[in-house]
Length: 183
Image 1 (cartoon, rainbow, N blue to C red):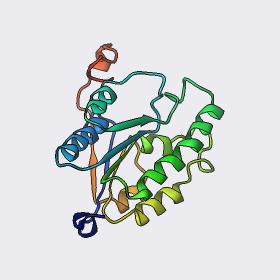
Image 2: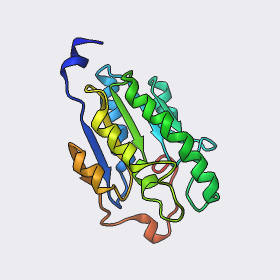
Image 3: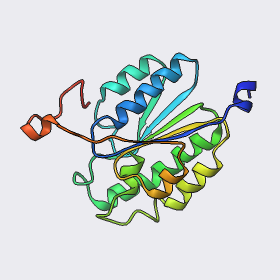
Image 4: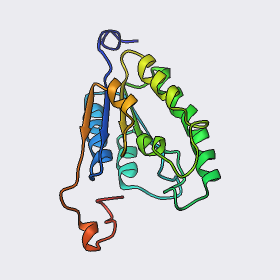
């Protein structure tokens, strides 16, 4: 472990709210971190590996792995399929954080996953384990958590909470997701 890893304090940053830009903010942070020679790993809890994402393509060129652990929006698959995906996803992401191998770990859409109310998730993605991760992560690791509806237990432990709110959005005018903007 480098001297820098031993002496710096890893931060916990949360990007939440109903506005567009939470993932984008975390990706900007990833870009900055890579530019400074830091090792970054990104996990997405909702997005599916069956789709292609522009940010994943770009990050791969920079040597940053972005892994989709989800299966898509909650209305696209059955609750059982989502529960199974979350049950597999959580240990993978937790291991990456606790390994200490990364300077920055981004858990994209983890807040969204924790906020699912259509079906039970506490037994496959326990909030108490997420809290323990925040409290016990290696001291040098910066942890970034994104997604709507961040739990108070998470925001209370975070060093930074940015709430992104929409004032205006083209979706409301009937414009669908735009390649290069949303995906």
